[in-house]
Length: 147
Image (cartoon, rainbow, N blue to C red; front, side):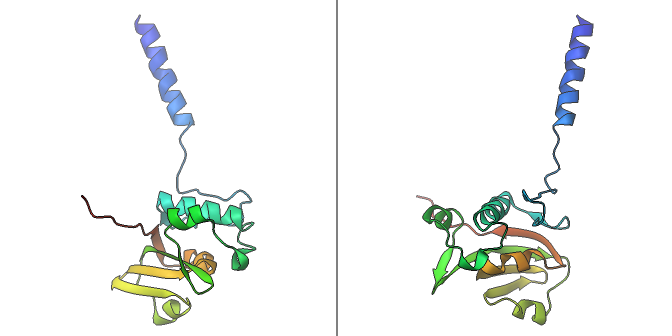
């Protein structure tokens, strides 16, 4: 009886170890566009990143991309003029310089040193994710009051 218990226990441990996946190694299907290893991203941002990469052929057709109504609702995208904007929060290891902030055509607001809110066009997401000081990125969500 003990032997069966220990074999079952060892089998469970073996299976759980073999299926471990490092969530930081988030590589796109082609392997060319990935979230950098030094950046932690929320699951919501990862989902958005995957859908954006698949829909734009790995960001090659990002400038002409029009999100679906479902994507607009799911990821809280806002249309301003002819462009769709994405909103969220990011954290950096060191504060961003004025030059780095001015490189984006949307708004990046400083909440505290190293803590920012952003509202930028979809076409600028790949540049944002490549900021060297970036440590964490997330998408904003709509807030609904409790009833």
